[in-house]
Amino acid sequence: MNDFLLVAAGGAVGAPLRYLTDRAVQARHDTVFPWGTFTVNVIGSLVLGVLTGAALSGAAGHTVQLLLGTGLCGALTTFSTFSYETRRLAEDGARAYAVANVIGSVVVGLGAAFAGSALAGALFT
Image 1: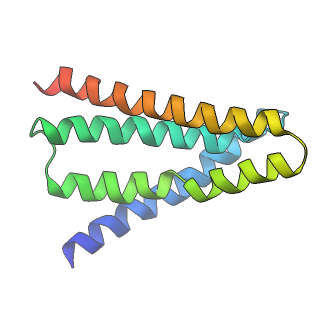
Image 2: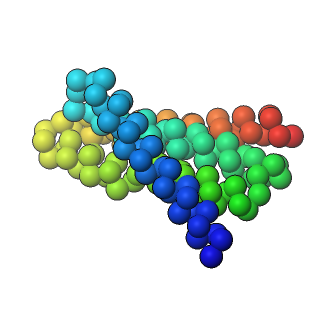
């Protein structure tokens, strides 16, 4: 039950943080490109990379992984919204934006995860 509560607590912070960040970022861009979703997914990838690196070095235990990794990052990031927005871009004729969203999200997200893991490795080893 404690594990469930840790995930729920992280999710309770991550979901509103995703919504507020998405709205704040998107409000600053006058484009159909989903910058808000892109931003939360990259931030979540970076945080999860740091957490993974910390866990691998022994600096983050099971409790932190559940609270921040599964809970916070799980609720902060959103594959379903990414998929929906990419499909919507393609259907609305903004195919270049759709392709840019897919390629950019994967490349930048993976880069952020690797950078976060490298940062944690440098900090915790």
